[in-house]
Length: 211
Image (cartoon, rainbow, N blue to C red; front, side, top):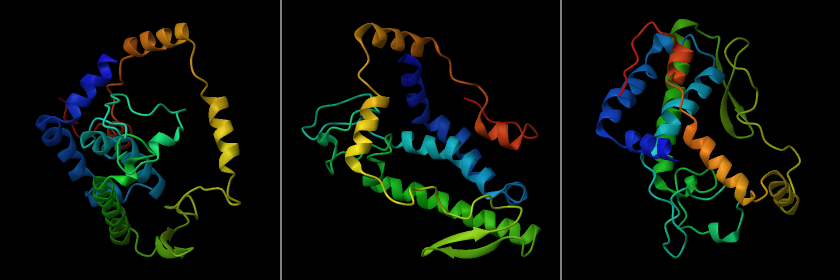
């Protein structure tokens, strides 16, 4: 997928860091902007802009436990036990990223932005956002600025691992050779959007740096 390779090269460049990521860093610390966002909006904006780019910027090439390179990493339907190894610390996969120490550094940065969001609302709307505790986890409550009363959505009664494996196999069966070739061709033809998540949420009142 040539466009993916170009995207990864751009994310890892010095130019991208100084022109885009440093700009995001400044914007996510701007109290005037943060005070206009709900907690959910802030989370969505972080997730689909600088958070995802930080994961891929510092991700190395994924490898199997024996050292074999797997350039595209684990496919979404591959739940083979070979991936359940501490050497699998690829930052570009939900399954393995938390094994990588960099994961905790970048998510520490995200947590700090939540604190900035709270401070911005305390300054702009004193008392409208309150700290609370949900099952031992710090959280927030507000009539206008917090959409959910739980830190995250999760199964309330747990789930059966074997059943979930069957679901994965049903949702993601191995593609037929012809279908696989068709999928690859469509991916190569697809062009990434030129409009960033930052532009979508923050609007166009300030120029967004481009590469």
